[in-house]
Amino acid sequence: MSRRIVLRPEAQADLLQARDWYAQEDSELAEAFVGSFEAIIARIGAMPELYPLVLKNARRGKLRRFPYLVYYRLFSDRVEVIGVLHGSRDPRVWQQRVDRKKF
Image 1: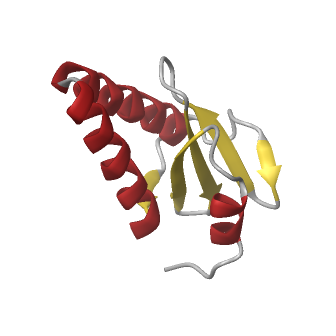
Image 2: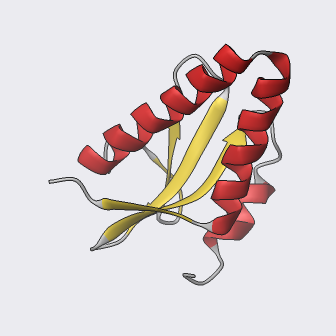
């Protein structure tokens, strides 16, 4: 049984920003990016412990075909996505989000 996936507002903003960037390049590329994100979210929901721990209780999965990483935390009732960031971004961006309280 899959866990419920919740995107924090920051993660939602990350996702939309990345999608919009790809859309400026090519609308089909933007659609492929969103599809890749949806695929990893489905994998995370089905097997949330599949990806490695990277800090405290945060895990990281990598999108296929795109250089983006999904950072998330597991809770008993849900998976909380805390960031969808390009792999070259400063890790402090998502690390600061791990320390914040639940929303």
